[in-house]
Image (cartoon, rainbow, N blue to C red; front, side, top):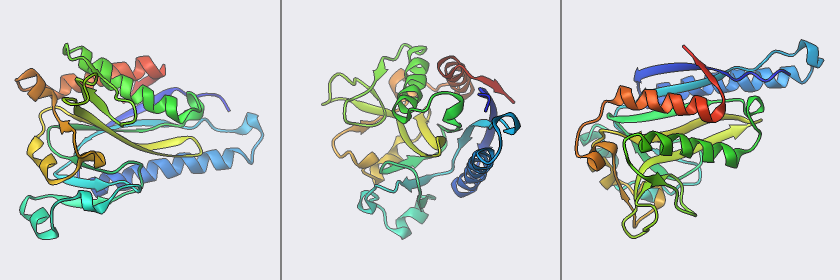
Length: 237
């Protein structure tokens, strides 16, 4: 099979979490099914597999990964409704997180056979996309050993603050789910969870660190640029 590094970029705008999840699942299944079908054919007859990069904004929602603890949601069903939020248990890795307006959520649905078959490298590349994007705003962000995400003041664990969360799923080297970068998000919603199961670390956002509102579209363009550079992909719309 010929590697296909062309990646279709789709912006879903403001979209309900469940609708976005269903759409992801549809694209994901189609890619996986094509890979399965290809294996029954001679290489000369195999079709190249597509790749997608989705950006979306979600209404207030909490999602719990398959390895998460439901006790890390600190709201009852009634209080969830009062705050206009929903809750889903989903099939990505990781614990609980929040999505909401002012946050860029990215869902790369990539066939890693088109790039490299190393899930740890894939996660490091996702982190690096965000780290390089933040550097363009003169923000020094990085990783903390043993913890997921991209962090500010990552070299000092006592004051480290998470600015981007990650959680992915892969099957047959096809990925789904992804990252959530806090841009102009209402950080108050994080007070109702133990973010990613980490009790002693704060959460932050780009606007809080810069002390000004940030153009979300500008951040998206920077993210797209660094995706293309790091993954050696070509984004199309």
